[in-house]
Structures are given as structure tokens and as C-alpha cells.
Length: 124
Image (cartoon, rainbow, N blue to C red; front, side, top):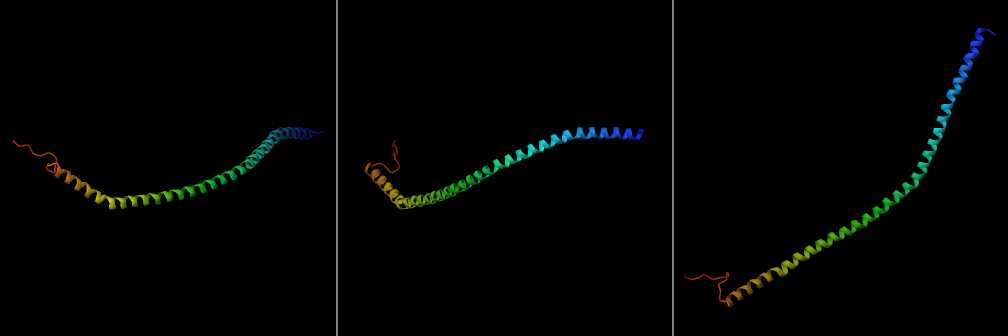
């Protein structure tokens, strides 16, 4: 064996040790990737039923909001009807009641012998 052969054997040995030292972190990195893949799979498996539940909840909420919209529309119609009925009642009964009140006030004033404005003037 010559000096070159010995240097080649030493270089090959150092290279083998270097490969062995680099293989350990690569092996651990592979395990990390396996764990990461398992975690992503678990999240994906857990998310699918959750998305189905959210979709069902949103659909149910949408139906309830449609019902509430119908109810509020009916309340609005009822409010308009009450307003119209109030206006009709005021127009039908309001003027005659005012006239009756004015007439009765005039009759009371005439019967009490006082002028229509309350108190009379004091004489000096």
C-alpha cells in the first residue's frame, strides 16, 4: 500500500462517518414529516363533519330568517291597517265630537249666565 492508497482509505472513512452523521438528522426529519402528515390528516378528518354541521346550521338559520321576514312583513301590513283605521275613526268621529263639545260648552255657558270666556269683568 502506498501513501495515496492510505489517504484514499482515510478520505473514504471520513466520508462514511460524515454520511452517517448526516443520516441521523435526515432520519429524524423524516419522522417529523410523518407526524406532520398524520396531523394534517386528523385535522382534515375532523374538519369535514364540522363543515357539514356549519352548512346545516346556516341553512336552518336562513329558513328561520325567511319566516321572520314574513312575520315582519305581516306586522308592517297590520300597522298600516291600524293607522288607516285610526285616521278613518278620527275623520268619522272627530269632527262631530268637536261640534258636540263646542255645543255643550255653549249651552253650559248660556245656562250659567256667564259670558263665554270664563269670568266676567268686575265693575267699579
